[in-house]
Image (cartoon, rainbow, N blue to C red; front, side, top):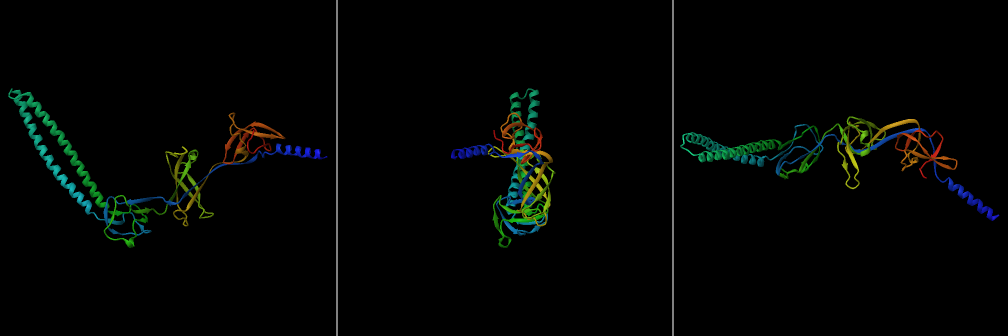
Length: 353
């Protein structure tokens, strides 16, 4: 009796082992490809204004958080250093003009001497060597004159650049916006404070339009193009949906040096809800494609290494049978079966030989 009982348990275990794999039925359902991207809201237009040189600040006219208009003066930098440079360049210009005049006088005199030598040569009163020597001297002077003219143009360009720089020392807002950063608080500013070349003095952000910057996988870039309309949400604004527009997608990939995988930057502009603040998380939920009422099975049911096309493992009773199928849309979780299966047929949920 004991032997029969043990045999029953052994057969029961074998029967359970035969059915240990999970199965799913091919049924009508939905197949969709949806992408979710995240980024942080920021002003659509931003700029950092830097000190053009090592300079002294004469006056600071704005505070952090202050709204400013395009062309409004934000601070005044002492122009003394720039004016000193202009005077030095103007002295160089005067010297260059004197050298040019002297060279032109010598050149004109040499041209007269050469013409006289040519006439004398015709009369047999001068040598060919005299003529060739004067021609060489003339070529040298013409080259020198060209170099001096180039130097003069360079000095004039430098003077113009310095004058523009002097005008820019009254630093003005390039567009309407709000001051988001000051290198020093206005209430502790001291006239005559020094700044170094390249120091960021202000950050200015536009108001109104905002944008998010986020990253696309290489395989997803074809789903986005400039001008495309998208739906945006924010975890901080539950239940609120607002529209966005793709303003730019990078033309070149950024390649990860470790993995070698490429990614693309995408910029999405939007008019923020009144509750939106800079720095809030924004989510882009993009439904790329969707098919309803189609025959579906999970993506995991596909043979991942099949070289013969798409196939699944069909289950008929206790039998496992490889079944070729024709596939339509492959979604995020499941796929569309065009042929090879009928509703109700069972396949292995996770393909296995």
